[in-house]
Image (cartoon, rainbow, N blue to C red; front, side):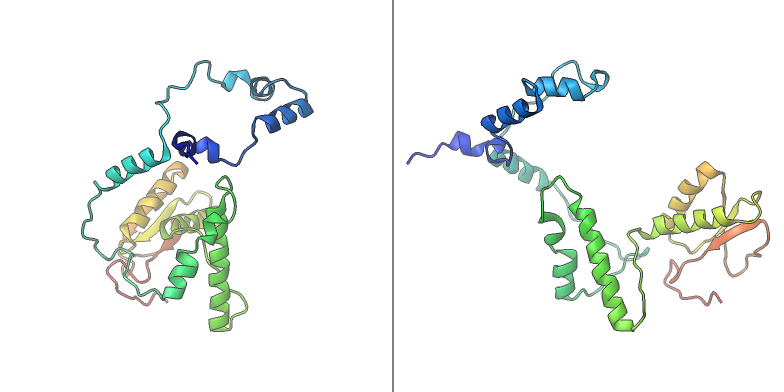
Length: 227
């Protein structure tokens, strides 16, 4: 049996989708003569391109993967500096495989669904359940937010709940991680919030501030008593 390489190499031939006969039946069932007619009836003309897409010629999967490998080979590995909130840890193999590398998070269904996000939620649920089992607490919580975004959300919550609407100063310890401070500044700008950075040990907190944030452990690794 002679294998048709050209046929096998085409992505569309292996795609799970209606064939020509199925398409004709579906079009007949909904009362249109062609895919083009269906599109013209459902997609507003004002948002449709009038010209053909300027795309290069299609490539085979093998050709594309080969070119992708050449591009990937140009990557360079540089020294990674631990710190600034990122610390080296020992991850148990069972956690790494079943939580961080679990293909079930992203391969259960079609690639058109938000399986990554759904998988992250499921991973967090597993993590919270494990914390409850280990600590005996009735409830545990874990967030999808990274540290910087979580800090910005906390600042905005304090801003929204402030009693004096004229107060716009938010104190930030100078030992908060720099990437977190940058996100705080970005979130503060549209609302006219003044980010005041200083020493948390000497600052005088007063009614001119609606909130404050400190780092634990601090940027340099110190653990302060914030009580």
